[in-house]
Length: 168
Ligand code: QAP
Ligand code: CO
Image (tube, rainbow, N blue to C red):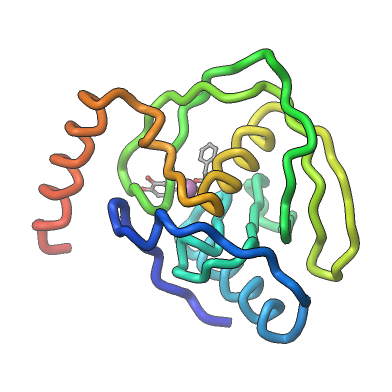
């Protein structure tokens, strides 16, 4: 397993649209394992392939503190989302140090393939719902900060520039 480099906002490659996976082969299995290692190493709760510069529809997620509940979503589709919205504070491995409130559907129903290529459908709420919507946005080239006001986005861009000048 390998820890992959995570693209940092506003890298234009984060705005690319991911293609569906046509076959779950060794290359995809390797990608999943590398993405999991990258997410656990960060540490994060979710990671989309777009963030590691692979423009294919793959998401890994683990919301448990024990870090033993890896979920894989290949070719995810949103089959339903609630009209009811909810505000949640989000962060992103591609926008380190920035946490902002975003409004999204409270509940969603998602259909996807797991790492074995089996189709499944789940209806979720809470953090899992937020995380799936956030990661599916990445596959569509969208980063959560784009939901914020121009004022907030400008402030974030300044903060990120300043942060990157600092030697770590
Ligand atoms: C997306 O985000 C998410 O700024 C996953 O310095 C986040 O794993 C969905 C992270 C919140 C729903 C709610 C962020 C790590 C991790 C940072 C993450 C940081 C270090 C973010
Ligand atoms: Co993200």
